[in-house]
Length: 482
Image (tube, rainbow, N blue to C red; front, side, top):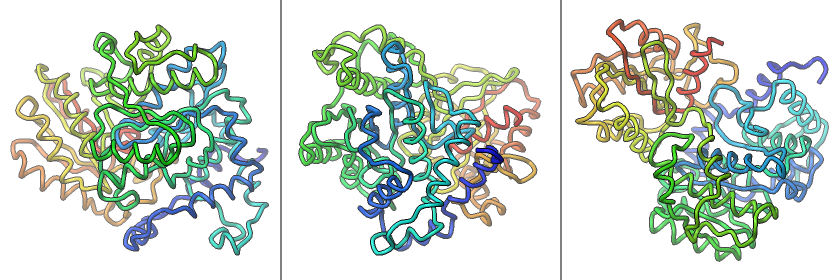
């Protein structure tokens, strides 16, 4: 849009974030998302000139879960990309982003350009600004109000993919499923549920059963659903009930043995489960679009087609079991931030470095969950094979100036706690109980922590970075020097 820049769009988008005080008030109230959240999303859709049925032409694969849903989406997208002659444009919507918000809306694997993001952003913004809703039905949608950050981006993704003429799209759920903003999708062509675990309890529930009920909310009438074979039994039972309610089936996908001989594009042995789920989802989608034969059935353990194998090999997904070489140092990055993901990724790190003679460094932060518990889970998976010589606890603030990179501004944490390094000092105190042989540092920001590590002058280092995708994303921005 004339006169508006990408920076203007990002500043406007950041204004839609919920601040820390509002988030805490909602948590303390005990109020969880309900059907009204989806009704409002349908109304926002109307105000930008669409009906939810318009999104059916995107041939959407809808993916939820607790652990691995983003990786599954990336694998699925990469498999579909092998069929370029029939699918010249494929959309991918994921969250959160690492370095730039444009990563959330990709076409053919590439983040939307700044120019297109700005163009489509203001098309949506202006339509919402100039339209209104009946306040008797939508009392929260007062004149001049806008949807929240994630809702706006979800609307933007639909608009972008339709305007760009995408033939198929992969959508990762934000949180949960039943009341998630993406769940206005009426007729997906396949649904997937990655491994379930305990996370976002204030929104989804405190048990696997409650969480599975929420995740199973993406199932739709007559749309085949798939899940991983190692799902917790109580979660699997609920998913089957949800599928029955929606007049469909949910099929557990075996982990394909031939993946043992394939180097997946995302490292970590646990990714074989996500890759298998992705293969089943892509297969169902390609059948639905009549691109491959309708008799194709991966659950009968047939050999993976070469296109599937190539897609799984070529998958790229930054911030997940990612290795970065900088000089003599090797950085091992993963945004793991739940018990299950921390344990899985720590197993990966242990296996790749346990015979390395280099000194070991931990760079960690988790600002909103039980960070002290997470470092215990991590340590239990590492010892006795890996012990850290240096441990640094940092905030997710990007720069020494005290500023965040514009795309990484976060209003959902307590600024006072961040400024006072409250979480970081608590982590250092807790780590000292775990291992008092490590040299401990507390850092005010990621740039400071990076410089600290690179100036240790104690020979080559193996550096493990985990606890938060915001930390990993900020680190990659610092590496870029932007």
